[in-house]
Length: 419
Figure (cartoon, rainbow, N blue to C red):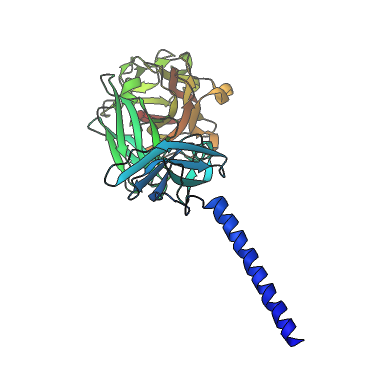
């Protein structure tokens, strides 16, 4: 019995071994009839560089002179592109652009091939691809300050940025005093960056955009839209005349008070001296300069008095600051405003003050106190123009008070700043 069982076991083992050999022979017959599997040499040092809806593949061929092409597979193998290779005796470089990619992290599979169609083992790499989402995320580098300098240049102080923000440079366009258009590049540094625009045209703006690289090795530069920026400048002498210090005027019969010279315009309400023939200006013998003034000495009130001038040319669109320097003593129930109004027809009356572009109260009844005698004070207000237009700029007053000198104010100068 034991002998028969041993013989059965031997027969079974032989049968299993013969079956296995048959399967191996069948595999060799089907898949290895021409010998072992042949692989071409793979691409070495493969790198993918990011771009705008595209990427660039770089790699090296360091072995296998039989390589004739390579393929790059994208979209999980659903798409691919083929590049023909002409090998030399040394190390050759692969470099190709992969177009029509979606924004986001993309995977790439690279295989080489010989003339018989044998492929290499795959090389897998990933890279970010950029597009509309990244474009929407970038903004123009901020300008901390842009001011006109005494040499006629504009000094731009740039806002600091992070070192990894990707800012490469700012491209700037501006016109000089001869109306020659300049196009210049300011290369970025993250902090403490300033630049100069020589001989910039006073009252003009500069236009700039910012260039970004999504990462240090990206092949495409992204740009913000161009943005206009004004240069903070004292444009008083560009658009105003007879603005002080030492206003010019024509004295009346009393030799002290008078009327402002052109381009100032004085309405009837401003003429509170000489029986309504002059007013709004004084240059007394003890004063070293002419002043814009209303004084109610002798109980000569000012009712809806206006003195103003119109800018010599339309102001460009932008932001402006008006500053005036004065000293005064005003009694209650009196109001004096410095006003900027759109157009060339003058400044509004008190009832229409809300129609002004901007204003500041020198005095407004009892809500604003008087300065100490002969102690000057400066006040400012801002206004914005959305399009170029002429502006009327001046003073509106309703001044009452009797006695000597009654109520009065004296403006030493007025200034117009483009921000």
